[in-house]
Image (cartoon, rainbow, N blue to C red; front, side, top):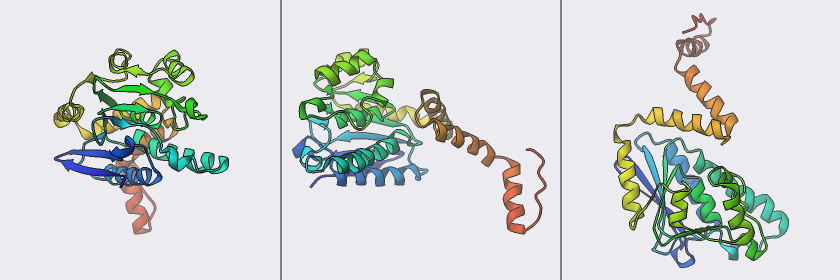
Amino acid sequence: MSGVSCTTTGTTAVLTLENGAKLNALTTGMLEALASHLDALDRNPEIRVVILTGEGPKAFCCGADIAEWGALGPAEFARYWVRDGHRVFDRLARLSKPVIGALNGHAFGGGLELAACCDIRVMTPRATLALPEAKVGIVPGWSGTQRLTRLLPEPVVKEMVLFGRRIPAARAEALGFVAAIAEDTLTAAHEIAADLGDVSPRANELAKAMIHGAVGEDRAAAIEALGSAAAGASADRDEGVAAFLEKRSAQFDGL
């Protein structure tokens, strides 16, 4: 059975892609499970950081399950499979908490696009990155030509998309896509997560939104979230709510 598990240790949550028999290929059920976990984690104040990894030693995620999407017609493929994947991937990228990608193996296609949604990544030395969609007659559909081009140079993305070249771990680190190479990526990710112990969760949330606004990651929502946070912390907001509940005119003082 494929799925996505969620375990917590202290203030850290670990999401694990569980479809090892198919190199953790993503199914509709896995996308739905991932989205459900992300919604719950975003609303859990006890969780400060999320680690995303895959089951087994071979692959972080080899992409989407071809057996599942291959049976879809063109309209269904574009309207549901691609858009639903985007919705879940965007949810991961815009999580209010820092996300560490522990790439325990190869990250191909949708798996690389999933890794690109993380805030920081560690990678095993034997893993490679690839966007092999053209070999099965399609193109990257979950932000491989969009979000990934903000993280890697355009020529490198073209190497993978147009020529099918794999990027080894050492080059991924040199390009800044991964922060570290480690034999045990999950342990390395936990060590990075431990650094957040003396960091303000609220400051991190705001800083992440500000950075996303700068690079165009859901800029409109980032700007409105920051403005709403400032307004929500004001005395005027408290007075406005109180006046509404008490059915009187608000007396704002601009504080």
